[in-house]
Length: 280
Image 1 (cartoon, rainbow, N blue to C red):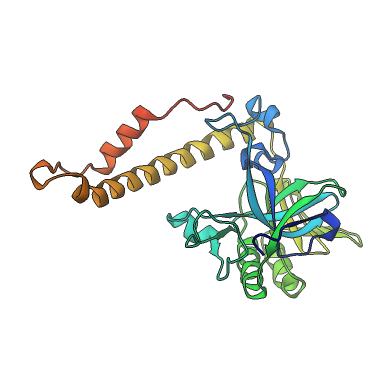
Image 2: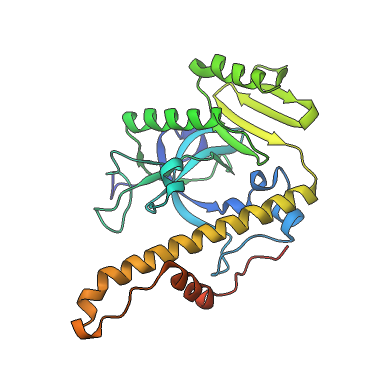
């Protein structure tokens, strides 16, 4: 498909289509804040160190919910235990755009993302995912969806064939079917203010009603843990890069002791720039 790009509108997209769009960081979506906006929880949009609130990237289209498209982002970054559990490597990524032909493409399957798109918007079409990869992606996503059990809003997918298992899991954990329409079915756990909605196309939305203070506390804890994991990964990569390059950059007499993970973390913390994200 490379070199023969065209555009598609939201209504023309088919599940498995790969498109390139401007995707907001997860920290700028309502799902990240249990339905609240970033402004209501953190006082403004989250931005990276370059002042950006999103990123232009390739995604796999799964379906739509009204004027919102459901998708999974693609990435070439992989290497942590978290990635192993929440990513799927495409067996065939020949249709994706890459700086290097040897780069591998991974699908972030941990949580389906939503993006509002006008029906008339021309979307940059890249190619289509193979049937084998789509079957594997749906299988991984649906199994993860059955395991959702937390305070954060999450989106997943459950095919018709798995609805009996899906419903039984909900009933076993205290949910009851509260509403059914031609378009969607809603299940509630009233004492914990939790709802689960499944559309007729299989898209699932887990939601828990929390106060702003509860969401703010939850987000602070989540991001502290995330930032710590990020520093660990950066330190590990730096230590590994130093080890790989030491032999070529230094003469035998010039070898220095290999930096420990703690030393690498300390150096990173000294060098890291202050984030441009709005403070709590």
